[in-house]
Length: 277
Length: 258
Image 1 (tube, one colour):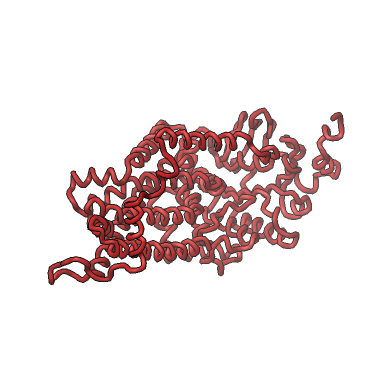
Image 2 (image 1 turned 60 degrees about the horizontal axis):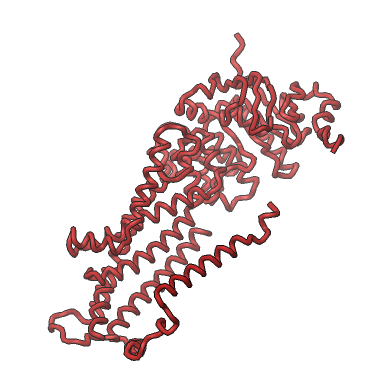
């Protein structure tokens, strides 16, 4: 094992190759450093945008009907819808990902030579790859066409890729747990699925939960962006305000997202501590 | 008629890769026996126990455990056989982030009924909890029922592991170095516990041990294992000092040519 501590030259070489590929790609597009900075008109827009950061809108900046809800309460409504879509999507994804992960885990099938043990984990992994292969916003466009502008379309668009990535990572986390307890449970006659469920799964649970929280964060951001496609989440208000150059209102939406993420991060950190303890 | 043995090996050999771990071992463990397996590290004690527990098929030779050849059984038959064999692992093999009662309840996962297991492992009924409590009482840690297993001391975890095996209601109890990690006073306590439980429930007991004196005092039969072969197999009184010396002598090739 000692020689594994020696520095590995191929790592440096690989890093160099990646850097070279990046520079070549930039050169192929004729990209120079100047292109990465905004031009005169762009700089003006950027200044106007950043200048509004300290004065977010607190009421409607354009005309609304008299019976329309107040500005802040409409922001609150959009926040609520953003949250609901994210939670529904992740709840769905979690429910589907757990059994898929158990089926895809090497551990579940270790030592079995039945033909089911050959086919089922591979088929499950293929399904997981398929679920992950299409980006959520592409799916959003698809479901928008198929289901119309319903919450269900947004939830499905976020849930399908999340199912794939959760199942993939869950299966990997399960397989990383050392097999002692699994083998002991198998040794007292437990079936492989129950040995994984009660011997391996509890040990992986803190990591599974931490990763789920991270995906929930992703789902929240995803739900926000769904607004760009017309779903009534925070992203919709942001896009409309941005198109009108109404930067104060844009900032209100951004702050709502930031507050949401911070509150969420604090909550999930507390939850993780409880699980680890 | 002589009752059939709890387990028997007939000319059993085991090779892992090109290493021979066990070499033509034949032995029988009777229904009321308490057997210690002695020998230096690497002699094959753990491997022998794993073969007796129907956990590892031999490369050659015949194995019978509780009147069955485990390696002729179908998957469900093997599971049902294993569910009647208690095995106390050297490292306890408990799930650290489950509660103590859950780790004991794990003992019945070998019985049929997956949905029942799921229910019992998450929401044990009042009478099931009472059973679990009673088992823990027999190993002296009933007050730890609802503790998180990882918070227990090594000695307490070992008792949980013993309780898990008892909850199986085993017909054969095996223990791999159960006193390897406890001090001499506690070691005797653990031996008293295991031998007492085996006696009161009439379960044959096979334990691998490092401590010769402990084995002599507590067990009815000693089997000396060296380099995968049985060196002696007799009652404690009949094992001579010469045999003991031979058992623990350093391997010959270490004194010989480089």
